[in-house]
Length: 345
Image (cartoon, rainbow, N blue to C red; front, side, top):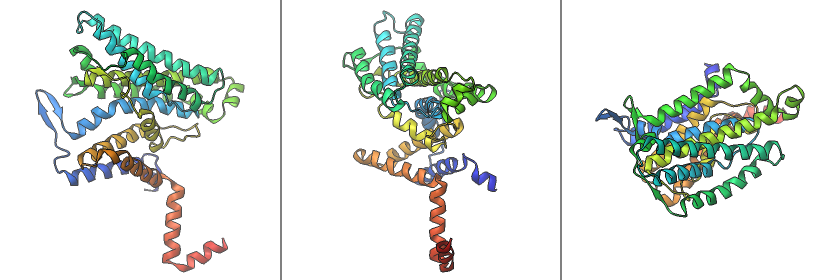
């Protein structure tokens, strides 16, 4: 029981279960699943489907944070990827043609990889602090996305491209399978090869890693490229889901939600320790919280405030030192003798 209590997934899963239980009590139909035209519908499916882009971005962010870095540009890369894909499709003579759709996806993914490599170059080669290096692209990226779309919302009509965001496979949204594939692939790479140890080593001490033969710069560039790739795929899912690209609002605040998901999942911001499964659970907590806020009718102007307070509460619950202080304070109030012992200690 003690091992279960100390497991890094215990508190994230407990918080997620508490949120789901609250939703169930508030709306008894919350867990209902319905099959229509071979597709599965329901609130739980919506959480997985709408949370897919955030889970992807958070998985990429986890590896960056594991190297003691941060990537504030993922939201902008989401907007750029969606804008580039929709622009390519909108210029095609036949928007449903395979060539047009594959070109749009390829260009968007290629652009995302280049932007990720740019972040990695600034961090590893020039020595700029990650928060500054990625802040540059975070600001400039919105401008790039609006340049691509000419400041307008680009709308498209392509069923084949829309399959990425609203298509179904085995009665479930296709985006869920994309997240599952990325998660499994990354898990195998970091746990079955030496890549995970390299990332943890660079996160603990990049200089020492370089001295023992690890190419720390290459590791840094790789994780930022992967983060850009995840953000690009998330941009494809978001833009195909709404069949449009909005350079100004697409992916807005995704970088902060992704960082919160990583922290809630137990990954240390000091680098060297990361948990992919915890990150996925953290992203589900944030998406469930968003769904809950909309469901109970919180006014839009205070939605972010409510969300911030709940996330703060989750982080405090997960903090072992905070829990110890609460328990100690409760003991000293209930049993005065404990207060004397603590004072002498």
